[in-house]
Image (tube, rainbow over all chains, first blue to last red; front, side, top):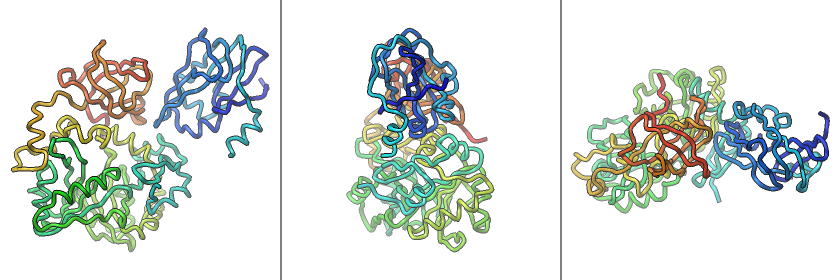
Amino acid sequence: MSKEFLFAKSHEWVQFLDDTRARIGISDYAQSELGDLVFISLPEEGDEVAVGETFADVESVKAVSNVYSPVTGIVKAINENLLDQPELVNSDAMDAWFIEVENISDRGDLLSEEEYKKLIAE
Amino acid sequence: MELKTPLYDCHVKAEGKIVPFAGYLLPVQYKSGVIAEHMAVRKAAGLFDVSHMGELVIKGKDAFNNIQMLVTNDCSRMKDGQVKYSPMCNEEGGVVDDVLIYRINGEEYLIVVNASNRHKDVEWMKAHLFGEAELLDLSDEMALIALQGPLSAIILGKLTDSDLLPVKYYTFKDNIDLSGINCMISKTGYTGEAGYEICCKNEDAVKLWEMLLDAGSDEGLIPCGLGARDTLRLEAGMPLYGHEMNDLISPIEAGLGFAVKLNKENFIGKKGIIDRGTPTRTRVGIKITGRGIAREDCPVFIGDKEIGKTTSGTHSPFLGYPIAMALVDVDVSSIGTVLEVDVRGRKIAAEIVKLPFYIHE
């Protein structure tokens, strides 16, 4: 997969596999701000996700944060590896996808990688 | 506006993530992260800036009598150079603060208090002083650095003659020369690990901090932030003011009965504690067996019945699972009790376990 990454202002990334399918994760900036992740809760296959709504929690040693969906669609798959090894997100956030969504009917405002880099540099 | 400790620039330089805490800007972690910092203290050593803690002195002919009235523990058998832990209560038997009392001599005691309570404590103590005794607040002049972990003694031994260091837990030595810096060193800490707390003047703090880090570099000493301080004290089952106790919770409920001496002639809060009768709630340790992390204020259930609330909770880096402390009904507080914790609307399986969660061998 060499498709480009797009970013939500709330620090999630989306990688579209085709027009209606995408993988979602959190940005490298987000993982470094959160610190060591020790627990991730994910939705189940078949669940609906919607733009701007929470679909997962990530917990670092110190705090819990919500992860918001950048798209509206149906959860096709979850990355079960993250349930046992949340630290995978810390070691490679761009590889550690959380969920794969299909039947995507809507997407929020998404930034290119360059635009996102500008945002976090502010 | 938050205050800075004398070590603020050191924290920034070491890439500490700075957060406001108890009125001070302090690092929650450095670049190694909470888990690595936590494990350094368990396996080697870690260095903490705890200069935000308050240092108060009570001195005068009636210093001892004042101390005895102010705190719930009995200081009558303390010798010079000893340290004692004690809650300090209000008239109703709630906890004003929990403090460490250092007996410098019979007419001079140092009291180390929580940063968040310092001003409240000063007011409280001043309002209750009697006889020939005065209270000094040295907090703005003194820095406090905690060196914690099994290799602490080796590291400190590089900076002074080891024979000069305090040997027994909860003792201290004054006027120790650490490579030219005058320090008061106590064998105390808030991590459940062997270690020292080192008090010096503000102007010496940076030099001392750098000297200690340098001395410990071969032993794996790293600077540690508030995050690791909290996970370490939680594993060690140590209460934190504002969580396991406050102005409304009695020290007995908070599991601090060992430091409440009701056979002492009198102290502030004695009547309040007695009037409360047998406590109906108590502090317990909880191991989360399901998936999730319970932090503070999560309701605790047995079936549909709420039996209490968590007071602190985190992922335990050493044990590898989530732990919490909670105040629960005494009737259902025995070890092994199976319960559920409500974490943001989701009930997670848990059980009551013995405190502390971690004991150093």
